[in-house]
Length: 167
Image (cartoon, rainbow, N blue to C red; front, side):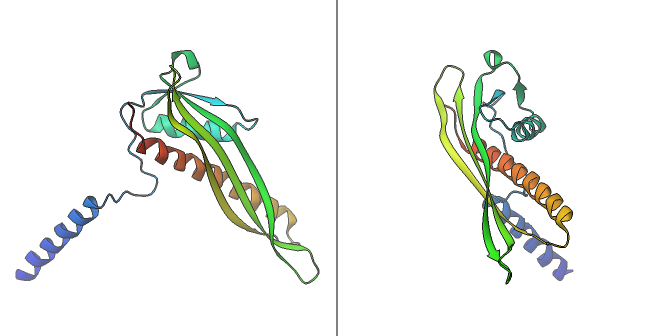
């Protein structure tokens, strides 16, 4: 009986410590209540990140408006681009591994013009190993990695949005 009391006490203490240190499950973001209606203004030619952000914001009960005039806040996606750098080369001087770099520039401002989050940049990197025997498989793997990088960028943007206070 004493063992179970100590076990329960220890469990409660650990839970208290975890909640006190700000621990959150991955992917969970506490969106601020002031961020209620947002328009995503994409200044880039790519639409994938815009769609991911809209889905994520709606999942957190943020109204995403297609008309910037009716939104309280404007989230500008100023630029997003992929770069590819050779990370390693085989003995026959063909690239074996690439480093994919995804860069996103964004800012958040009120519809009245006041900047809430100044223009900032996210950089996400991943490694891609190329198998010359399976070129089609490598292309599919690259597409999957790029989707994951966009999803990660959207999540990091939500984290940054959740940390700012409106004034």
